[in-house]
Structure formats: C-alpha cells, structure tokens
Image 1 (cartoon, one colour):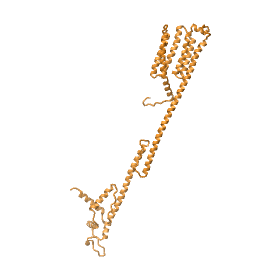
Image 2 (cartoon, one colour):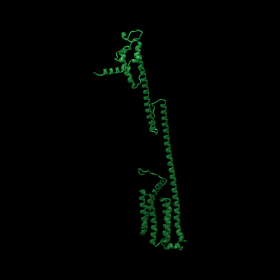
Image 3 (spheres, one colour):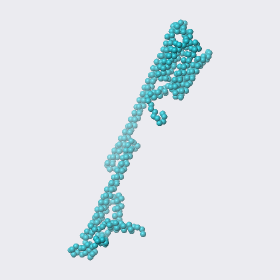
Image 4 (spheres, one colour):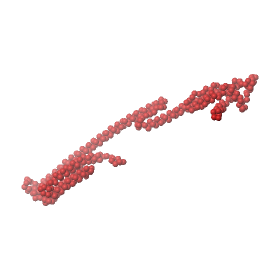
Length: 405
C-alpha cells in the first residue's frame, strides 16, 4: 500500500492474492523436481553413446526449471509457472522432433513421448488455473495430431500402421493416433474439473472469510456503538442533574462528562452557568444597594425632620464606603442638638437668617430669649435647614484638616 493512497480490495483481488499464495510453494516444489529429474537424465544422453538430442532436451528442462525457481523467489509466480510449463513442453517437443530428424522418422519407441504431454496438462492445472488444462490440452492434441500425421514414419511404425507388424496382433493409424489423443483429452478434462473445484473452494473460502471479517466488524461496531450510547446516556443524565440543581438554586453545580461526545455541551453549559451566576450575584448586589440607598434617604429625611438618625445595615457592596463615611461625619462633627443647628442657621448671612418674629400673642422675641420656640425650630428643621450643604461643608473641612502642614 502506497502512502497517501487508499488500498481498495475487491473480491477478485482477494481471489487472485489467495491463488498466488497457493501457487508459489507449488511452483517452487515443481521447479526443484524438474531440476532433479533433468539432472538424473543427463547420463541418458551420454550412455552408451552421445545423444545430442536428449542432452539438448535435458538442458532446456534445466534452464527452464532454474529460471522458474528464480522468478518464483522474486515473487513473479505467474511468470515462473508459464516459464516452467513452456520449458517442459519445449523439451518434449524437441525430443520428438529431434529423434524423428535423427532416425529419419517417428519410431514405435517415440510414441510414449506423446504421453508425457499428460504430465504437462496436469501441471498446467496446478500452475495456470482452470483455463490452463484446456489451453494446454488443445495445444498438445494439435501438436500430437500434426506430428503423427505429417512427420515421416520408421519401418516398424509403418508396419504397425498397416497391421503387418509381426509383434502385434493388429494395428492401425486410428489406433495409434486415438490412444495418444484420448489420454491427453481425458487428462485435460479431469485436470480442468480438479482446477475448477479448487477455484470454487477458494471462492467459497474467500466468501466465508469475507463474511467472517464482516461479522467481526459488525460486532466491533456494535460494541463501539453500545459504549458510545452508554457514554451519551451518562452524560445526558449528568447534564439533566445539573439543570435540576440550578433550578433548585444551586448555582455552583457544574457538569463533568469527561472526554466524551458531550464534552463541548458540558463546557458551554458550565460557561453559561458561570455567567448567569455572575449576573445573579450582580443583581443581588444591585438590589441591596437600591435598598440601602432608599433606607439612607429615609434616614436623612428623618434627620431633616429632627428625628434620630438610623443608619441602614451594611450591604457588603461598595456602597458600604458611603455608609462608613456618613457614620464618621455623624460621630465626629455633627450638630449636638437643635439649638446649635438653629444658632448656626441664625449666623448665615443670607436674608433667611433674620430672627423670626414672635406671634401676636405677646410672647418674647427670639433675640431676647436667646432661643426659638419649638414650633419655629421644627419649622426650620423641616423646611429651611440645608442638610446637604452642611455635609459638603463638613467634608471640605475634614479634607483640609487631614492635609499635612
């Protein structure tokens, strides 16, 4: 498989791969056997006399077997099988043609050579698949028919064909030709049937292996889906629990789903809850500030009316700084009583600082008595005393005294 490409395996590719794996040890074994047989046949070309035709045929077998073995070892199985079959067929054909040329024709001793084609047909079924026996059988039958018909015949063979051969009861050309052709044809048919059955068995085994692999993948995927479904159920249950807790007011509840498929949802939910929690706390702080501001305003109104000042409760917000400053101003420089406030008011330079006249019933004036009647003091406190201006003045005086000399 080349990096960056997708290796797509089809059923035909699987069958070819299995057939290749099946043929490789067979080709190696047959090539070794051919080498051994050809080596053993070398003395046949030397004893009792030199036989160049036999030596050449044996040499063809040796070269073909050696080349087939090398190709098979280099993973060229199909080529090795073709070379092996071709070398055997060429060696047999050379032996027949060479002997006919040397002897002046085909002899009775050469007829068994045609039967060697049956071995070639059987080997073709092992090395070339189901089509090998048919192709090889047709080729050998054609060669046999042409050789027996057109090549010259020796005297004993001609006598056999004429039925006058003394060492045989009878004989004929039909008998000679049909024996060789029948052997080759029967061998081709049987080998073809055997190769077909082997290929069918391989196809069935391939289908069974594919089915088993598919079933295994289905089981793995089912297990993965079940685990994923369990994680989803667990994560959804946790998220529902968080929603229920938040609905009960537990703003610190958070979703924890690990590294599952719902992790982004849990993270988004936690961020949303954090923001809602901050907004809720800010809203609560704002409500406390509004309540404290309202209570402070009411307290100041009571002071302006001459009633005791009641400070609001602290809120735990920055508004408490205002309450602290007011409490400090009140305890350090606030007027002692209504008379001192009225005296301070009577010293104001504006037109409103003039003493009020007594009522017409003859009561003493404010200047004679040094104090105002209660109704006038209440009137001043309720309507004329500038409490904000007094606070500003106290703050400026405090700031001036706090500066270093």
